[in-house]
Length: 281
Image (cartoon, rainbow, N blue to C red; front, side, top):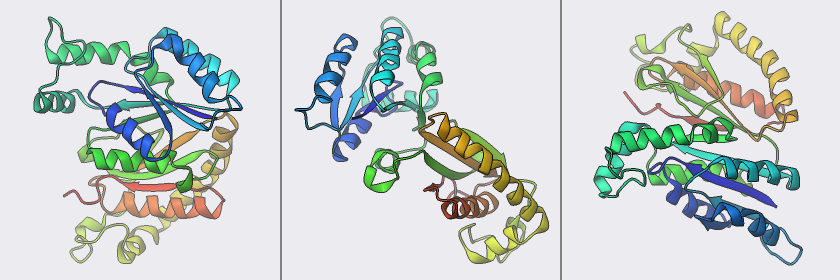
């Protein structure tokens, strides 16, 4: 049985995640008391049960829940903790638009309540297998993100790798494991005929990739990933996100991310490719 524990900040998308897992055919249990977690997982994984994928959506993740997860990891082969994050500014906007009360807002401001919960869940975030920052994601995009990571029909059974691109001027993504800076590469933005294009287009890829400095960079990365990826997999890491950044996230980082993903596919991995800022100006 595969078990995923979904937790995170209030307003970061737990309800959307619960619906996404249901749509993917997972058996979803929302707001389960921590004391019942062992019993539910025991019943779900019994011989008479038909549940091979279970998602527990938890509003809180305290020391007791952390201990339950540690115990479950010794009993089940596939246990994943998914943490949903968002910036305080975005969470305030979401609460103000829905008129909902924050669960920790009694006698304090909304900002203070959000920061208190962030501090309370700090250990859970630090120990999560996968962190998804929903600040720039609408519900549809969050569903797509989770589907690409957790839908068995869309990915292999090994370590799930995401190769992404972003623009530094739009902020460094929080939910990545490795960040690599491509701003030292020649910039197609300054070529008038290439500026409207993106790193997914052939002329931009040729401009960026067919340079000695880029070839050396990719060669070094190839050797690095040959060592890192099997080591991560051997350590039991379920999700790995590699992010390439350039100034705007439209040309250099996109071209490099596409090239690296292609190489990883040739090596037998099954990477997902994501370009966060490719349409931003």
